[in-house]
Each structure stands twice: as C-alpha cells, then as structure tokens.
Length: 237
Ligand SMILES: C[S@@+](CC[C@H](N)C(=O)[O-])C[C@H]1O[C@@H](n2cnc3c(N)ncnc32)[C@H](O)[C@@H]1O
Image (cartoon, rainbow, N blue to C red; front, top):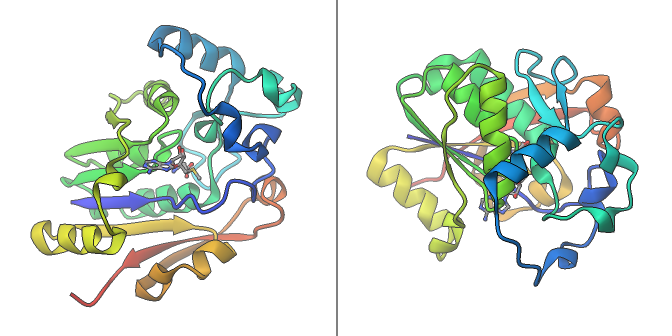
C-alpha cells in the first residue's frame, strides 16, 4: 500500500488565484446542501481544461486559469470553500510526475492519495496500473473535481473519501509508522521545499527520491519556486 501526501502547511504561498489567499474563516459557519450535479455544473463553468503547462503534460485537468471568471472576480462572491482542488500544486505535480516515470511503484498496489485536490496523483496512480486507488480530501468539491478529471483522462474515477481521516490519528508519525509496520505501507510526499516543509519535524525522516524543475508558467504562478521534489518517509522502526 502507498500513501501520498501533499502537506497543507500554508495557503498563501501560491499566487495562482486570489481565492486561495483569503482567510479560511470566511467560509466557516456557512452550511450548504452539497448537490453533486450542481457542483459539477459549477466546476464546468468556472474552470478550464488545462494540459501541457505542468510537469505532467499527459494529464488533462480542469483548473482555474486567468480566463476563468473567479480569477479576477471578487473573492466574496465565491460560494464554496476555498478551491484548493482548482490548482495543480507544485508538490502534486512532482509526485504525479514521479509516479508516471516509475509505474512499478504503484502497479498492482492499493494507493491512497491524501490531500488529493484535483486528483492528479490519484489519476497518475490509476494510469500506472494501481489495483485500488482512494483519493481523500476534506473538501467534497475535490471529489467532484477528481471525478471530472478522471473522466477527462478517459479513466474510471478513484474512490473518493471526504472524511478527515487524519483526525483519527493522535499522532501523524505513529499513524504512519503503524501503517508501515502492519501493512508494509510506503509513504511518498511531494513538496516544493517550502520553509514550512523544510522546518517540519518530519523532514529529518525523509529521503529525497526525485527533484524536478518546474515549467516557467508554474514558477510564475508560485512566486518563483523553481523546483519541486518527492520524498520517501523512512523512519527507523
Ligand atoms: C495544497 S493542496 C494539494 C492538492 C493536490 N494534492 C495537488 O498537489 O494538486 C492540499 C489539499 O489537501 C486538502 N486537505 C487539507 N487538510 C486535509 C486533511 N486533513 N485530509 C485530507 N485532505 C486535506 C485540501 O483540501 C487541499 O485540497
């Protein structure tokens, strides 16, 4: 079994879109009935199909681009939670590139993409022949986006879970260690080497697996971040 991570240390490092720079507080207390069909319609109307400009040009994804209404629209008009799923983050790009370059890593495996957002890494795992893929994100819109993106790539969507499964663990490290000991789980993490990542306690337990230079457009949208990498979690058990 494999676990893939995108840590969410900070929401404000990316300048893709003003929506992800807003305070998360904005959406607290707002209760909406989640209607899959209307969310699908909303995503279809407010994203654009993008390929080429990422580390994985073979994947097509519905994302925010400057030609989407909410790129420039007043953020308070956005009716849902902050749309992390509408951005293909540099860490996820590195992770997906790594999987596609090394299909044996997840071929025949059960894969959990944790913090799956647009679902790119889960989609990469499916393309690599994973036996079972679960995409987990606490935002139910990410599940809809993942379904739409899977279909865009001609694939059956992964199972999408929207529970906060991380909250079931009292400690991230002991949870990961237990997964590794009990199931032989491998844990891969993608991150562009942000300060929050480099300074995190888990960092000393990570072994670098790959480093990728980000395409120019991704650099521009991420305050000049030039590289993104993949690490393997290798604690002494
Ligand atoms: C920086 S985005 C990365 C998305 C995607 N992996 C990518 O690289 O494009 C982090 C994602 O983690 C999700 N997230 C945050 N906390 C989470 C949690 N406790 N469990 C699952 N997902 C979570 C967010 O909703 C967001 O979609």
